[in-house]
Image (tube, rainbow over all chains, first blue to last red):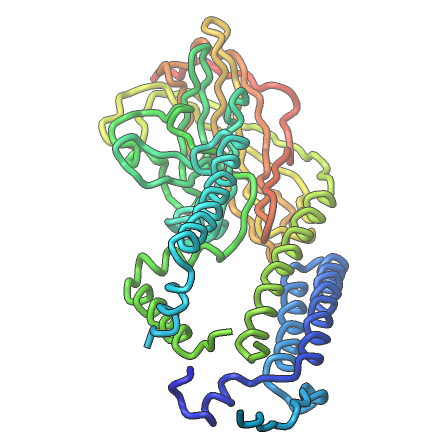
Length: 90
Length: 177
Length: 179
């Protein structure tokens, strides 16, 4: 990756800030657990296995769209790097 | 191109490399233990099989995964879907038992695929009945589609190369963490 | 560290685990909630034993039994239940030969019923498969029990089976028809 031009690197990397990443990981775990339970209940009461699977897939697509591409709202807490300081010449 | 990786490996040293090898061996052997443990519990030489032929359609299509058990003291009944291997042929066949004759020494079985017009006598390679010893197990559980990857790999060898190509590509654009 | 690929990887592996859990839940729930079947009736008519050959290469002449039968059963609650992909129904004859003590069971007729078909089984059919005794003759066989079984194939999960209909008591096997 280091031998590709920096603009391409940035696009392929798609970083977001660490705090958002952390929140995202926890949220996706909770979301998936809820999705599994809802899909199961839906499929049981509608007596259709296919409906449950479609519901799960739909929910998954929504999660992927909201979480994977580096949207601006995911970059709300950018890391503040300290300014570059020159060391004293000894 | 691989200078980063090679430099990293060099910093590990002989002990480091051996440790990594040991880690790898642990993973492989625990996987093997789990598989063999499953074979013991189910008393079957291959408790998970992939459906290879279309002779049980529309119940099982090629690529479906079947879970088998082979309880030792329980005789097979007609209507059971069994996976058996004819001595001399290597392919396991998944068909239903349509005749069973139990004597005090053995149990003779005749099978037929649901989608086939006639019974399996032509597949038996000369013998007239199958016996318990030919059977790998009886189908208890079923998972659709998942095994299709293995069949696709066999039928389309280009897929194997395409997959290797993709892995190589991902390795190139991945950044070292 | 926080790249797109890493998020994609993380979410896909989580999703794979959860989809497997979902399938497991569906399998268990459907297996535990299978509806019970009202056992119906099988009526056997025109059972005869005559000489014939099996439909296979090099078959010798032996005694074959053939029959017509009437089925009456309602399999709808099972067919439309939660996880049913199809039902496989088959008519079996079970008999014992007293002299040798051997137990025999053969399938005479079967049919595949897919989920979408409404099936109130009422059929007058004759046997699909030839019925023969491995010893070649039916003279040691006095009677047989006829049962209609079903085998339930789910979309995902555990296979189950049961009895859909039985005949009213054992059926006597007649003498060989002398031509």
